[in-house]
Image (cartoon, rainbow, N blue to C red; front, side, top):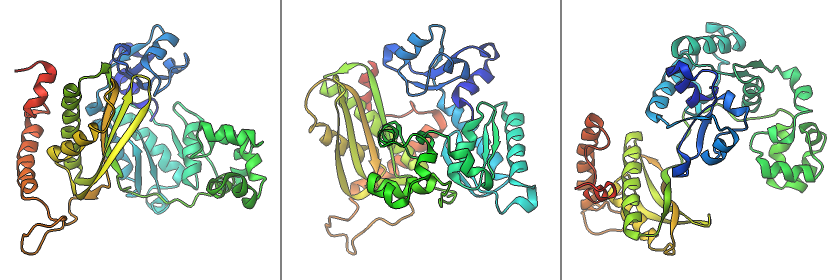
Length: 388
């Protein structure tokens, strides 16, 4: 999708059309840009840029707070369009996905025509513009989708691949970031064609394990298949504070709020995890992490918080500008948890207290789903908002 979040906001408020628009947090709260319209991009505004920097580049920038519930709802509508044409849909994010339509061409026509039909249906049903790339591999399809943005539609046929890739900068290869691209340039590889001209052995000798991957992609070879449901590896939440926080009591309140939110999301996704990771960033931007792995997986807020709080105590007591918690080692809730045969103490047995918390959490989730996130929450977090 083209400038997805910003495009939704412009669609819902036509007076913003043609103006530089960005979705993100305010500069006063150390916010960052989540999405920028193409009008804003002409000023140099980009996603992941600090809001303060974006407003300095574009004084007339219209800044809109994010509405993720709305973006998620639109994403579901778009994914439903994809599902009409193939069950092989691999979402990458709310606004992007790979589709394998090789087995659907007898029903719906060529891959080119399917791509165009999807583009038109998304516009008709959501009022939003998609850029679509059609190609033999995932790498090339992604490349094609970016080539003619906004409102792009590009098809790359197999015979076009060598000539198309050769002049492109090495940074266009999937998985090569800015740092690796600079390293390749120092070695004399400025274009994808420069890489394609070298043997696999040469690239592996110079780049290590990355060499074989680069060797294949430089020739347009990408064996990855479209995977309809990629297993989620981790889930977490973090926040950059409006001001640096030194008070441990205040940090613990924030941490409890994060843990409860992460736990709810895990239950909503049908997941639980074993490894809890705390992330802390100091005023000088130094960032550290602390982790602990549990004997059994959980998706309970109190359980996650107990570990996260313990990890917080291992962080030096300096003011923090950012705090976050992540749960990894995820598994499906349908996977059985280890129990003991006769209920005796065992390191792998699920504590009775956690079994009770499971039942409590299920009831609280029903209240939250019906009345909203603020309906029920831990009393200790109320002081955060000065409530009584």
